[in-house]
Amino acid sequence: MTLSAYLGLLSLGSTIQTRYNAECQEEEQQELNALQSMAQHISAAEIDTVSTVSIHHAPSERRVEVRENITGVVLAIGTMVANYSLCFPIVAARHRLQALPTLHSYNRDTPLYGIHTIIYTYKNGGIRRLYPGFGLGLIGQTLSATYESGLNQVMSTLIVSARKHSNILGTCTTLLAKGLALFINIPLYPLYRNALILRVQQSNQIVINNPQDFFRRYKQDLQAFWPGNVHHRQLLNGFIPSGILNLITEKLLIYIYRHIFQFFSSNPNNTSNENLSTSSVAVADSGGNTATSSTTTTTTTTNASLASSNSKKKRDSTVLHTFYPEIACGVISSIITRALSYPIETVIYKLMVQDTGVLTVNTNYTGFFDCVKKTFYEEGGWKAFYPGWGIGVLEIGMGYIILEASWWAYRVTQWKLQVPGTSDTRAVRKARKLRDRLL
Image (cartoon, rainbow, N blue to C red; front, side, top):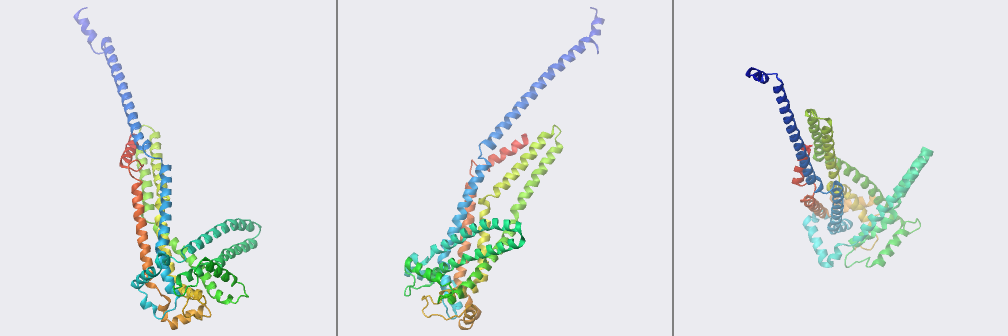
């Protein structure tokens, strides 16, 4: 082959040059395919590793939710038991001062005097004297709650069926249900009256000394509801105001509780959850707009963000996270209601202990308004309706201490549930963020 012919084969566009370029492109494409396959395998391995850390090494959301619900129920019951047990001696001392007519008692009944009264009671009767009729209050509350629950289940069905026939029949059934709901006050009033006698009676003037005395007096009070009984009028003087007060305070308590709870519910937690959900969706949308590969990744990221937000909301709504606001609102509404009904309670307690034998000098109130009149003119004006106000201050202070203790118990429990191994650890949160980025 001549030199000119060889140079012609090497010139641009010749067959040998074309064959060489095609072979190089094939080799480069094979190497590129191999690198892409390796990168895909590495990405899949990274996703599997991160998913293992963020999911399989953390308990499921269901287990976390069940654990938080159980812990919240335990804390709620413990708080209520502690509140009832620790405040009972203070409440018993306050009832004792409210039921005994005393001239200018307002000037005497300071918080310091309340402390001395409780200490004196303990020294003269021991721990048992601080808790007179402790179980009677629990029995009364249990009977009332059980009766109302069963009555609501039965009467709600009857009211619905009655309204289907006619509005008049539905109205009559509703009135019957309200009357049956008030009927529980008849057996409960003698129970609470004898519990008050146990708190008021002194060591030198004991009226109820054993369970037999209690049941005997309870039977006498039940029989006094019959019109022909000699104690009928005297019993009704305390029973009717007591029933009306219970009805009013129950409605007032629910009203105050709802407003306080709504105030707490409209504060940071709900807004933070909403902001979290909105920001998660916004991040997902921005990622979807910039992605050019496919819409599957965008949908997966959006669903993952929404699921994470919903699961956080679900965890925040467990009993562990809701018991403290409910307990706090209940205690606050109870204190406000008790403060508003304090003067009427004083009058009712005086009527309840009249003619029971626990008073050194028996009173002769002829009715509710007569008791109001004599208390105002004979015991020191409007201040006479607030005997034991100092012990009431102690009661508020004890309630505050219990709320603080329950709050710290909640914080410690929440911290204990977030130790390594739970779904909220720092390593798991980082792993989940890496998984979202890889996906």
